[in-house]
Structures are given as C-alpha cells and as structure tokens.
Image (cartoon, rainbow, N blue to C red; front, side, top):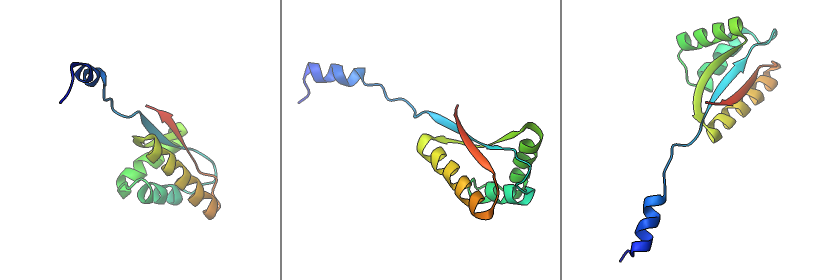
Length: 99
C-alpha cells in the first residue's frame, strides 16, 4: 500500500521528452553529388527526391538537414556517414546540433 510520502514523490517526478539533435551534412568540394544522395538514401532513409533536395541545400547553403533524432541515434548516424565516406575516399562530414 502506498504511503502519503511515496505519493508525494510520485507527483514530483516529471517525465520529459529526450533532447533532440539535428544531423547536418556539411558541404565540401570533393564529395560527389551521387555519393551524397546515396548517403542520404542509405543512412537517413530518404527518397531519391528528398535526397536531391537536401544535397542541393548542402551545396547552396554549406549545410543541409538530414533529420532530427535522440542523442544516441544522431551520434550513430554521424559515425556511419564518417565511416562510409572515408571508406569511399570522400571527406564528407556530418555534425549534430541540439535542436
């Protein structure tokens, strides 16, 4: 049976949404457009059309939004981009920023 003290503690616990992080691709002069589109489709599960739009945004504004995720997922996606880019010989870089 719950005591008055334990009920008070339950009322004080606030459940909040986890902090979200934007994952952004940064422009460079060496990564091919096709490679960037492939990364967006493979890692971020975008359609070809969505990938093309993000790729153009990266090219025009120096960075483009790939998605918004919890910290762990954003961190994993940044690491995946880096690993695949280096393996393919591209300097493509992804970063994460608090939303």
